[in-house]
Length: 445
Ligand SMILES: Nc1nc2c(ncn2[C@@H]2O[C@H](COP(=O)(O)OP(=O)(O)OP(=O)(O)O)[C@@H](O)[C@H]2O)c(=O)[nH]1
Image 1 (cartoon, helix red, strand yellow):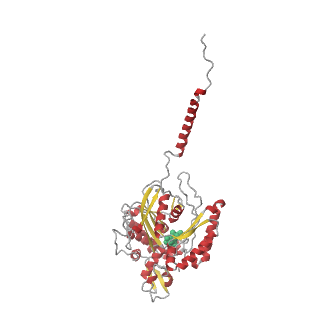
Image 2: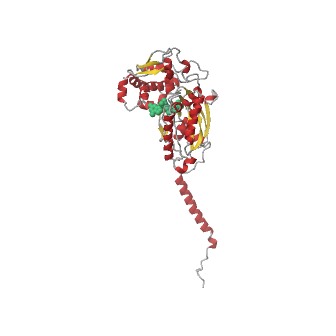
C-alpha cells in the first residue's frame, strides 16, 4: 500500500554537537534528506529508497570526522506516513523498520534505534525547534507557535493564556526548559497532511464512483487517467471506496478557486464541539495567541505561489490564488518546466487547502493571518521536528537556567586581571616587615 507520498527525512547531527561560540546554540547540521515517494515505499520500492538512504549515509560519513563516527548517535524517527502504514498493515511497517535498521547498522555511527513518533511529539518537537533556534527559550521570551504541514498529518502547537491543560488534557505537553515552565497546547491531525487531505477531498468528489471527476482544484486543461484502487489505498479514505466503481477514472481540472474552497471544506467537520471552543473534528483549540511559524509544506507551497508575505491582505492573497487556479495547465507547465509535474499539478489545491485550514480550521482571521510567518529555515537550520527530537533525546536543553554570568566574557577577563594585579600588590605589601631595613639612616654626630 502507498500510505502517503510523504518524504522520508534523515537528519544527521555531528556529535558532540557543534555549538556557536557566542550563543552556545547547537547548530543543526542537516546533511541530506532522503527523498523518495515515502518511507512506506521501502516496502514497494526498497531498491530505489534504499539507494537514496545509502547515499545519504555515505555523505554523512564524509562529513562527520572519522574519529567521531562511533560516538555520533543516529536516531530514526518516522512520522505520519508510517503511522498510517502501521495502522493499515503492521507487518509491512515492521518490515520497513527492519530493512531500514539493517541498512543503518552497517554504518559506523552509534545507532540508537528507530521509533514511530506520536503526533503529539511531532507537534511539540517542532515547537521546541522553532523556539530554540529563535533563542526564545533561553531568554524566556514570548514563544512562537508552530504550524507544521506534512504529507500525511498536520500539527498546531502554541502556548495560550487560555489553556492550562485541564480541558482536554491529551492536548497538553508540559516542559521545564532553562528554568521556565511551559504548558503547550498541541494537536496533530492525522490524514490532514496535504497529500492525504487531497485524497479525502477526491474521495468526497468521487463517492459514487463516476468515470469522470471534474476537479475545481486542478487547472483547466489538466486531464489524467487515475486508478480508483490507488486513490482509496489509505486508511484515511479506504472505508469510503465506492462499490461499483470502474478501475479507472478521468481526472479533469476546471480551475475554480471558490468551488475548490467549498470542496476542501468538505474534509473538515464543524458540527460538534464539547469544549469551550474547537478547531474542527471536535478538537479543542484555545484562543490563538502570539506569533506563529509555519513550515514544511506550508513553506514549499506558499513560497512557490509567491504568497509568503503575510502583510498582504488575506483577500488579495485569495484573489491571487484564484487567478493562479484559473490559469490553463499548458501555460503553467510552460512557465515552470523545472518543477516536478506532481507538485505543479497540485499547487492550486495545496494553496487553497492551506488558506482553508488556517482560516476555517484554525480560525486565523484577516488580522491574525499577519501573525504567521512562512519559514523554511531559522538562522540556517531547518524548521521542523527533527532538531527538537535530537535535542530532547540527547538532553541538550537543560531544565534549569545555567548560571548566567553577570558580565560578558571580556568583562570577566578585565575584572579578573585587575583583581590579580591588586592581589599581587597586596602580597608584596604584606611582605613589608621582611623587607631589608635601610642602613643609610642619617647619623647624629
Ligand atoms: N513543493 C514541494 N513539496 C515538497 C518538497 N519536499 C516535500 N514536499 C511535500 O511536502 C509535504 C511535506 O513533506 P515533509 O516535510 O517531508 O513531511 P512528511 O514527512 O510527509 O510529514 P508527515 O505527514 O508528518 O509524515 C509532502 O506532501 C511532500 O510531498 C519540495 O521540495 N517541494
